[in-house]
Picture (tube, helix red, strand yellow):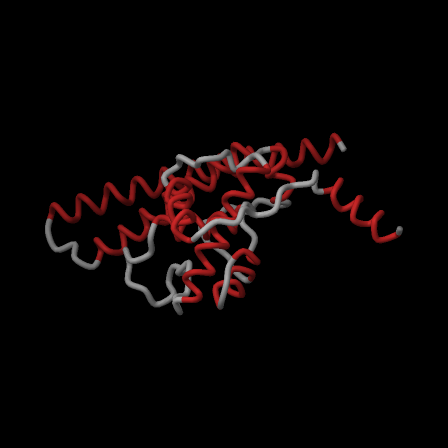
Length: 203
């Protein structure tokens, strides 16, 4: 009886959120590509959308682990600039945003994700509450952060061979885009933080 009461309370607290969706790795790859492109098949702000994203991460991560591959790759983890894919960056930022749990990953990346700190990710306290009260802004923040990381990767790749005036001009344009992304991230983080604080004061 006590166990049933505990389970019922846990279910109510989580709004009976659906479990991560089960799927083959091929379907998971397609789902993750759509999320990374900003065209998710389900809205991640809904329980169903979150379950779909987490299920895709679990399925693809398991397949990569079975193949002996560490996935997703982390920036500055020994790979050359430009080798980390948009999907990998989206997944890493998804962990930082709280949309994906570190437990959804397999192998050494799970431990790394649990300790992960992203220098460019703005400080947002209480991500779980943020996902409830400011989810659209948090999604926009995730997408902007992913774009920033990609721009930084391209910037580092171009910096290695910026030996002409044209290359230097491309570097300046990339730097300007990075600055805009950083400013947008900060503005979104302030909105999310304000909504979290307003929700906390409202009880």
